Image (tube, rainbow, N blue to C red; front, side, top):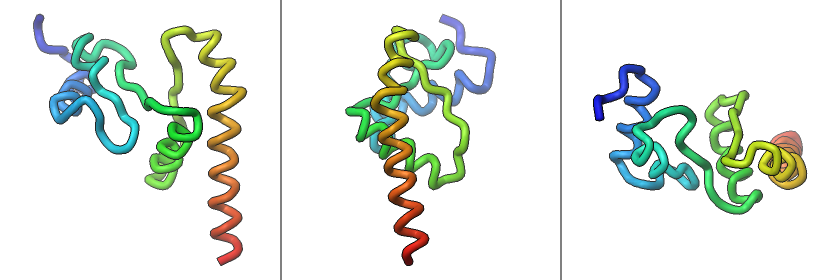
Length: 101
């Protein structure tokens, strides 16, 4: 297959070449298998583990996350029930600790 023409896909493939998992939870094998077409990396783990990984990105200054799965409706429901509350809880605890210090 021809290499991708867009920079985002080239970066995803470069990350995937470093290994199937980067940082705590970033899984890149999907990018390697699909030629990095579309949104092809994933944070994997329990809702609490993924929330912890999102908090790491938040600490780096990321304020907007694109989160989707392979089953958009069911995944959105699960994110709303489990992932987002876990992330908000971690963030609130972090802010509470920072304010107490």
